[in-house]
Each structure stands twice: as structure tokens, then as C-alpha cells.
Image 1 (cartoon, rainbow, N blue to C red):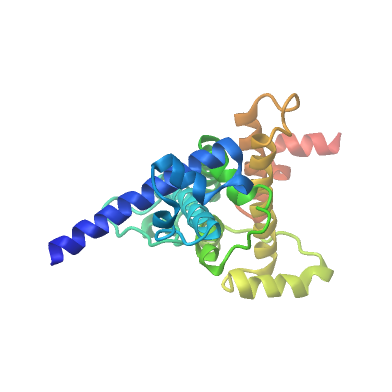
Image 2 (image 1 turned 60 degrees about the horizontal axis):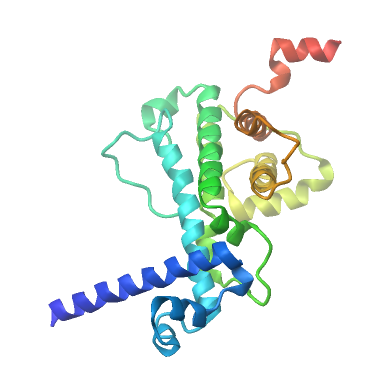
Length: 270
């Protein structure tokens, strides 16, 4: 009986994967608003009633695609941190979902500010690379809302993975004394404390506000590029993106601020 159950489970996984693959093809061709279970079933040679045993509604299928996309971009971000200088050595336990790798103990104890900034840049570049390679999945999670669809709580954890990885970098820097405090407007302090309690109680409120702004600006940069707002405006996209996210790292408190650079100070005096 165990063998039979195992075969059934594998068959169900294969059919589920085929359904989602076809749905992604339809997303690319027609957009999320036109996703249809009947059309997916027809392309797969299934009757609609059979497909409903896997996904009872269009919204259930959309949710599965959304969770997959959030998990994929989150995994890309976390993998970038694993590969970055000072990350845990190979053979260390892999982090679970929504948990970004912290710096290894030797690296964390003497990590220069530039190391934290480098990890930030590597993460941002990995998120952008994923988005450019999967534009329709990116549009599903960061583009226009799908009419009539309301995302369930199942999507919250996967959606938080990139933000959690950004927070992990700031947390490492804070723990090792390599995090500068960004400015915080007095009128924003109550909101800053609320965000801190919600997102990262172990970080200073000014940093949490800066992280929240940087998180939104990261995806704003990617969306502008992916959805065409940079067309005929920004030509050197790679260099522009790296410059922009490097500055975001400074705004969060990672690394030396550009104003500390001699060239920047000279420009300011002029």
C-alpha cells in the first residue's frame, strides 16, 4: 500500500506541476486577468472537472503561482547572501524558508563596513536578475493587482523573504557595530516604533524606517526597468542599478556615506 500511495503522490505532483507550467505560459501570453482553468485544462487535454480536483478555483491556482514566485525570488536573494563574502561556510546547515544566512562568526567579528554593503548589493543584483529572467512572474507579484483576486494569508510568509534577507544584513551590521544610524524625522517616530515592533524589534527605529524605504525603492527600480519606464532614458542599466542600490545601502546605514568620500566633499564645497 505504501508503494501505491507513493506512486499516487508522485503522479499528483507531476500533474500539479504541469498545470502550473501551463498557467505560467498563459500568464505570459494573456496576463493574469485572463487566466482560465478551462483553458488550462483544454491545453493539457484534461476535462475541467479533473483539474478542479487540483485547484478548485482560478484564485487557488493564482495563489499557488504567487507563492511559487515569491519563494523563487526569495530563494534567489538568500542564495546571493550564501555566496557573498563572509557567508556561512559550505557544510553549515542551510537556512529555512524566510531566514537569510547570517555572517559566519569569524567574519562577523571583524567585518568591515564594506562587507555589509557588498552583501546588500549582491542581494539586490540577484533579485533584479531573477526579475529580468522571469518578467511575467515578477509582474504577477509586483505588477498591477489582478481584478477580483484577494491574496490570502498563505502569501505573507513567502512575500517577506526578500525583506527578511535585507533585514538580516542590517542585523549583522548592527551586531558587529558596523551600522550607522540614519536620520529620523521627529514626526515619524511613532510610526517608526510601530514598524520596528512589527518588522525587526532588535534594530533601531531609524534603521527600520530606512530599510522599509529601501525595500520599496529596490522594487521601484526593478519595476521601472522591467515595465519600460527607463526606455530611451537609462542606457547603462547594470551600472545605473548598482549605483542606485549602493546608495540605498548607505541610506540604511551600511558602509561609508558618499558624502564621506573626498570627491563628494569636494563637489559639495564647490
